[in-house]
Each structure stands twice: as structure tokens, then as C-alpha cells.
Length: 194
Image (cartoon, rainbow, N blue to C red; front, side, top):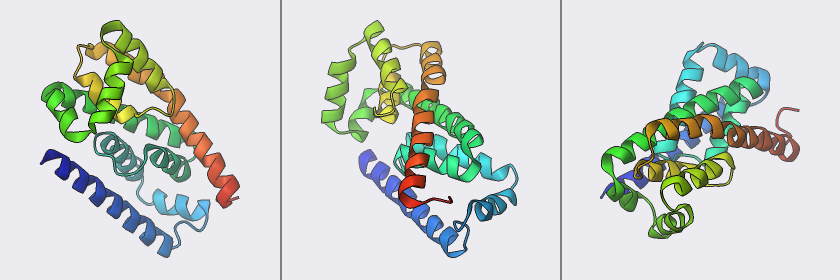
């Protein structure tokens, strides 16, 4: 039951994002960086706050692939501000995922994620200090399933302080690589606002 609700919520979020992107495109918001900047400026701090909240929710309830959210932050707010808004939102969401899993325990993992994924990372990460070292490594690199790993960490004996330190210190590298790397790809392949 939980898995179906989770999938339905993710699909609804994806549909709403696609509809919003279409409306922005129809309104000419995506025609240039200036048009986008002018549009977002009318919302003041509301635009960054909504984006940070979106990124936080995105960790707990995946709506878009994480890399696309990072790309959106850089496109919407520029390289540095986009990076910081991505970082703040993703870190808040990572803390929320840990708290939810800490509260709900292992049955939550089993109801939301495929058994193969759970078994793979259970075997790979181990427990105790080994888990903490591997967890930090996987959070640092940009290709691991970070959102799942945050939920998984919540079901272990890892202390809040250690978890928070790993998230705050290891997330910037992967967020920067996603943000800047995908921006470069978008500019080179799609000619995004040259």
C-alpha cells in the first residue's frame, strides 16, 4: 500500500513539473536567461525558498532525477546561488529522509525500495564503522543512489552527529559535479542560452 502511494505521489509530482515547464515555455520564460531571471525576480525570496523546499522534498519523494533538480537550480539562479540553493535543499531533504527512516525503521525500506537494491547496499556497506566509511564515500561521489542511502542510514545505529557531518561535508562535491557538469552538457548539446 505504501509503495503504491509513494509511486503515485512521485508520478503526480513529475506530471506537475512537466505541466509547469510547459506553461513556462508557452509564456516565453525559457527563451533567454534574462526572461527567466526577470520572471523569477518578481517573486523575490519566494522563488529560492520554493526551490529549496522542492529540492528537500525531492530527496524524500523523488519527482525528477536528482541531477535535473541540480541543473534547474543553476539554470534558474546562476552557478553560485544555484549551487547553494541545491546544497541547502538536498541537505535538508537528506536529514528528513534519515529522520523518517529512523522513526519508521526497516519496514519502510522494504515497502519503498526494490529488494535487489536493499540487498546490494546491505552487502556492500556492511555495518558499524565500515558502513560509515562506505556511506561517506557513496555520498561524496555523484553516481550513487544518495536518496536511498539516506533512508538506509536511518535504519542503522549511525549517530545523528556523524550522519549530519557526512551529509554536510560530502554532499558539496557531488552537487557541484551534477550542477556544473549538467550545465556544461546542456549548453554544449542544446545550445542553452549561449
